[in-house]
Amino acid sequence: MTRYAKRVDDNHKEVVEGIRAALPEATVCDLSGSGKGVPDLLVGYAGRNFLLEIKDGAKSPSRRDLTDAQKTFHCRWQGQVAIATSAAGAIAAILRTLTQ
Image 1 (cartoon, rainbow, N blue to C red):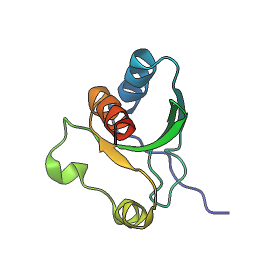
Image 2 (image 1 turned 135 degrees about the vertical axis):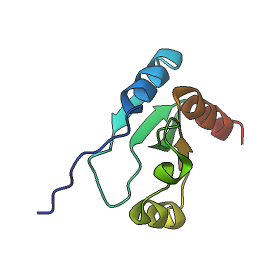
Image 3 (image 1 turned 90 degrees about the vertical axis):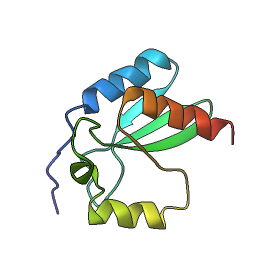
Image 4 (image 1 turned 60 degrees about the vertical axis):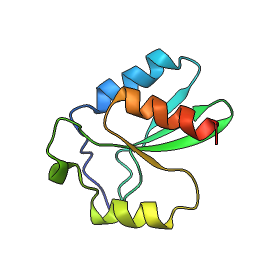
């Protein structure tokens, strides 16, 4: 069995808490330990599922780049996936997708 180190960005907890505070009826599942480029969060809200990759907005743009595995996942995934650097950005991505 392959094991993956669970590395999360410094703002990961803040983003999760922000989503839960702003959208208390949402369910948030932490997928950050999944590996293979799978996004950090699965959020269920308003009958829909949202995949969110969390990046730390305080880091330089080069340190916020997706890994090769994340790029591959994003390119191949047939459903919704978004990148967020803050709780506000995560919530905006969820709400924007709902209106499409």
